Amino acid sequence: MKNIAIFASGTGSNFDALINAVENGDLPANIKLLVSDKKSAKVIEKAEKKGLPTLVFSAKDYASKADYEAMIVENLQKHGVEWVVLAGYMRLLGETLLGAYPNKIINIHPSLLPAYKGKDAVKQALEAGEKTVGVSIHYVDAGMDTGQLIAQESIHLTGRETEFEVMEMVHHIEHQLYPRTLAKLFKN
Ligand code: GAR
Image (cartoon, rainbow, N blue to C red):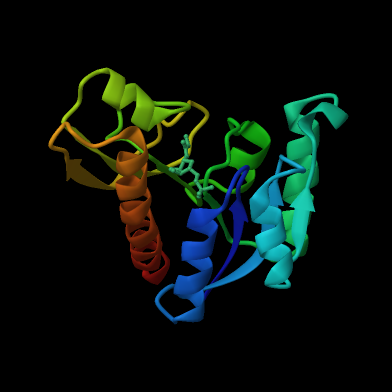
């Protein structure tokens, strides 16, 4: 069993998938903390309903990234967190967090990296006329969606799907691939 924290800024559909996987015994982890940088994020309510501790902060309340990351690291350590799992956390990590958890921070991204990094990756891919999109899971480094790849899965499109339909297909893959990939990592 690994003690993990999930970082998320949005809706939290991946958070739900990870919680379900833990509850079903498919992911050998204890979710110790949800960290969010968005006070209005839906994922916070979801964590509260599950009775999970949450750490919600606003970057603008701190003088620097190093300052708020030091506060986060202190909380992670207090909860005995061993791995950090980013699930739609839309903020670059700095040296303070990366240094505290070397090779123990994982991210999921809705593209076949190294293509279409950053925000709205599915939209970027569709606007570029891609017929193959996908999902990547990777170690996190200081760049934007640049760390070493761990797993990828492709989705082949007919070209007639709407962006909404493609997003649904991407989420469907994410919700299976993330717990499965983390389970493998945590067993090693
Ligand atoms: C997911 O599609 C995830 O891959 C993406 O944010 C979404 C969060 O959805 N992450 C990135 O784009 C990271 N660069 P969710 O809140 O429903 O899990």
